Length: 169
Image (tube, rainbow, N blue to C red; front, side, top):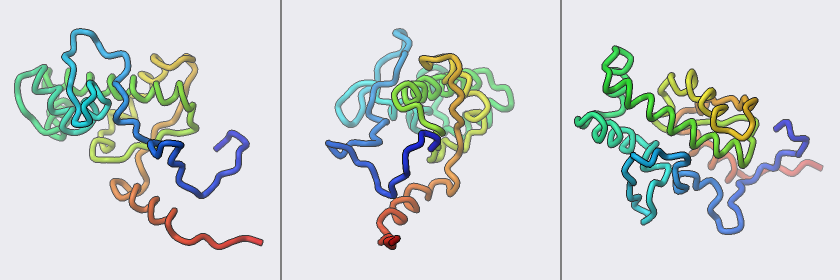
């Protein structure tokens, strides 16, 4: 961890069992010209309504006028399609702003991303600079990494935590 604290092999759930519910915080530094999005949880502009696959596709549909899957948006952006380049840039900006809020609150040693959109290589090339722009300190250099085991990383971690640990005497 780098903090000098010892690592406990326990899942941190928090006082209200909400630890890790980052996706249901409002997306920070949202441009006032962007229309709000209602989340299934009943709140407006939850991070997941912007940064999930469906949220990314919705951003593209609202800005460009066509319904396209995230992978097609990314592939077309890489080939220079102007609308897709704009949508990908906006996605990366929103992701960087949202992760900057995590850096401002927790100042983690590393951020690990999972899920299908974590496969977008432009995240790892562009988002660190966006985080620095929106973090409290302009010298924030928090590494962003892909989950080692991809989409199954969360399940593997849960299985590891649920496995009975041997006591060390």
